[in-house]
Length: 106
Image (cartoon, rainbow, N blue to C red):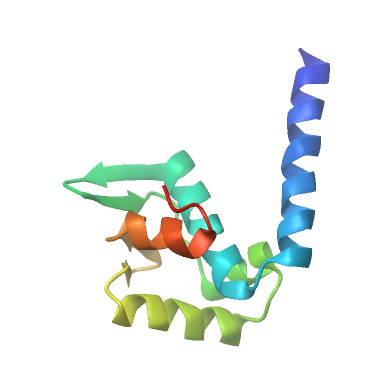
């Protein structure tokens, strides 16, 4: 059991490292939001609301960029109608667009 947990964590860290090296900020941000939605999301109609409040700085730390870059990227996603943010809670309004941005066109 312990080896399975360690192996899983190593796979996740490997994926994070590859993403930091090969993906741009928008792709990393889309992947992060999708991952968080799968793990902490609550479906409300066709939207998914993340049940964890996140600041822009926390998101920036998770994707390896600056708070200002995250703010710009999130604002662009809000303008496109992909997501909305209220009281630090993210609502995914278009999972399909996030999938496209993340490179997972499915």
